Structure formats: structure tokens, C-alpha cells
Image 1 (cartoon, rainbow, N blue to C red):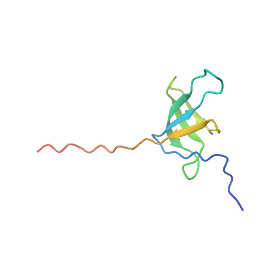
Image 2 (image 1 turned 120 degrees about the vertical axis):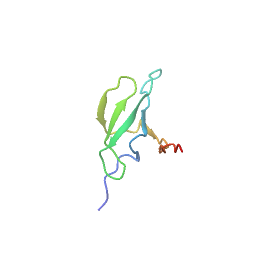
Image 3 (image 1 turned 90 degrees about the vertical axis):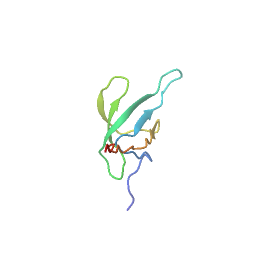
Length: 80
């Protein structure tokens, strides 16, 4: 009774998904993960691509990795 896991990619909203170029000279593509649609921080993800702003659902392949970005909590500035 195993689990199906084709990818070790794990992410949270706010992380950056990066897809490597497939051919020499081809640029990589990246986008902000807006929503995690899978279980346990796994894919698929809803991503807003930085190059054109398009939002799409993606199940990343072996050519992808996640940059985990630190979440900064904004604290209101106390003015007394």
C-alpha cells in the first residue's frame, strides 16, 4: 500500500517555482506559487508566471525546483 509520488517537489504559497530551460540557450521560467492544490505541500500548484503574468495549474516535472522564500510577517509599527 504505497503512495504515488513522482516528484519530491514540495512548496507553499509564496514560494517560487523554477522550470529549467530544455535546450541550450533556452531561458528558465519562474513564477510565484499562489496555491497548493495537492496534499502535503505537493503538486499540482497554481502559479503566476513572472514573464507574462499568466496563471496556470502545473504538475512540475524533473526539470523543476522550488525556491522556498522566507515568509515575513509584517508587524504594525507601534506609534506612541
